[in-house]
Length: 263
Image (cartoon, rainbow, N blue to C red; front, side, top):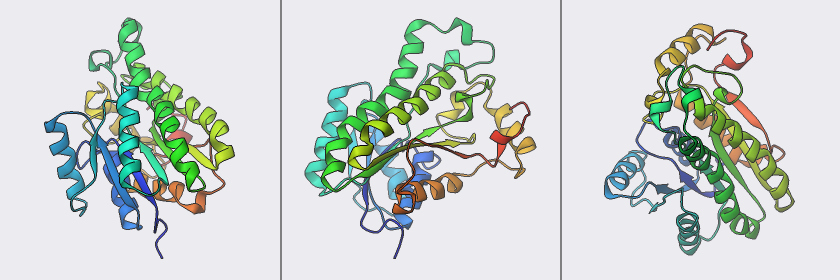
């Protein structure tokens, strides 16, 4: 029996075959889960997500557009999911956004108010909104697991990460408060702090190449994290093996967070 047999969930953030969300979906499916997917609005985004999901061997995948900046869109996605599925066991929040103009070394001080608020809204508040929408569906089947993706730049200054680091700090803190609120319904909320990975999103960070070089040099495992590393950890956190784990931030970064060296 696989770890996720009978589990059904909704994944946000599959942009292409390199996305962390894609790696999580691949591992979840391999362990028996049935996954549905929400993507950015627009035909181009739908095609890109569909291609990535079909690459995982999912025929006729369940897809729905979602503008995460819209509470109505988020509510609509969960309503559609509930109409087509009898249960919701897990939600994966793997989305973030910041204006790339302000993701450059030395640019944080100049971050405009609008760019700051937008980054926190899309990267952190959306976890609150999605958790609120997921709560009644998970409660119906005795609980569930909500998982979001973070990065060490939430705790330490990483050159070029800038406002995204602030947003990820808000994400991690939001997860802890959500865990406290939703625990009475046996709903667990956690974050994974993954190491830097070459993705569509990370390409916007001005210091990504330096981050990758430093990680490989200083991490105890002397390598960069791979998508499968995060996927495997996500399976454990979604599964009943992690039934007592909530409000936690789990590092999957080859140990880099333990080292007192520049990243």
